[in-house]
Length: 224
Ligand SMILES: [Zn+2]
Image 1 (cartoon, rainbow, N blue to C red):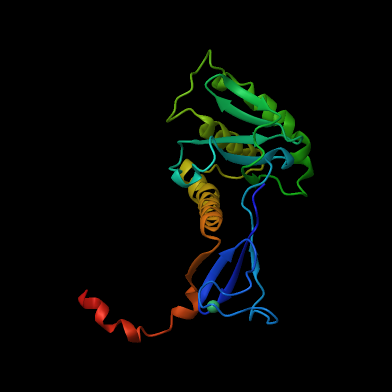
Image 2: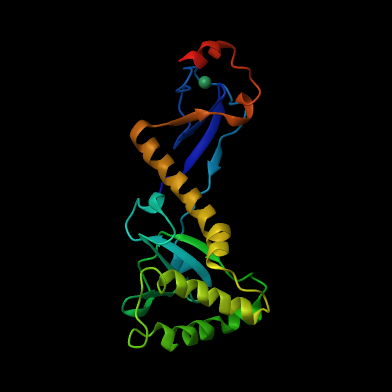
């Protein structure tokens, strides 16, 4: 499991770490017996076990640590869970129904908890959709660019939207509004974990405090 990342603020820095240290890694002030001005906040872990999230869209990296290289299709695999956490995903060999292997992924729930009628038909929809000729390798073959795991999941989501009389999402809309923001958050989280594992801390200027300060000591920096 991932360790949980926390963030606290000191001397105008945001300091990310796994544990609050005894002293500030930036200015050296001791924290013993003192309270931080603001309580540390925990950074939510963007990954969860896809098999435990029913009726969801999942994004998994085919290897660990490749999420940061996400460009919309490569190195990532997408799937849809049924109500029992079985992950339906489309590969060169056709639609797979997997009971394991999606324990660490980005999960986007697709059904609100009060959508009982949709939920009760979900497994049937998913099974019927997945049995269509479109996803049968004998009828139509997998194509890295145009007929892949992403087309499978998005086409299914659009079929579900149609049953709810909602308009279909284009690939770009879906990627921009649902997928990319989560991928970015996941990439950042992985970067934080990597940095903290190597250096104990990841320290950046605290954006809200520095924005109004005048750079009085940096007047010469323009000439450099
Ligand atoms: Zn400090």
